[in-house]
Length: 92
Image (cartoon, rainbow, N blue to C red; front, side, top):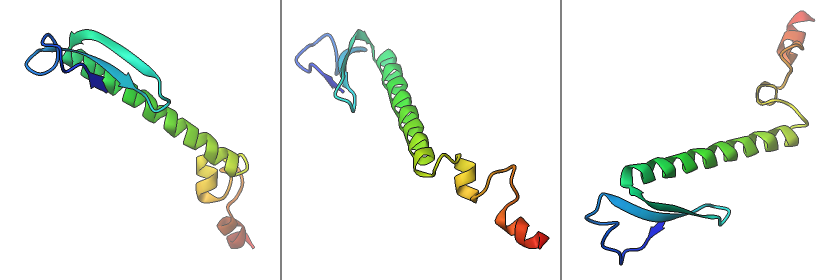
């Protein structure tokens, strides 16, 4: 996030700012002059969206690399509908 420090109507000593947010994909988003609290909200919203997208991407990568298993199936090594290896051993 960057702002124009040469302007006296925004930034330090002002309740307002105008910033440009640079996203990890190099997209630049101009947040026009507004209150610093609204800029903070915008920043937090963008950060939350980025984190959610990263979690979704990791989840999809996990399913892809685990042969289509869900997180729970991958973690515990079995399908909830199928008896576990431990359960199969107990039954024998």
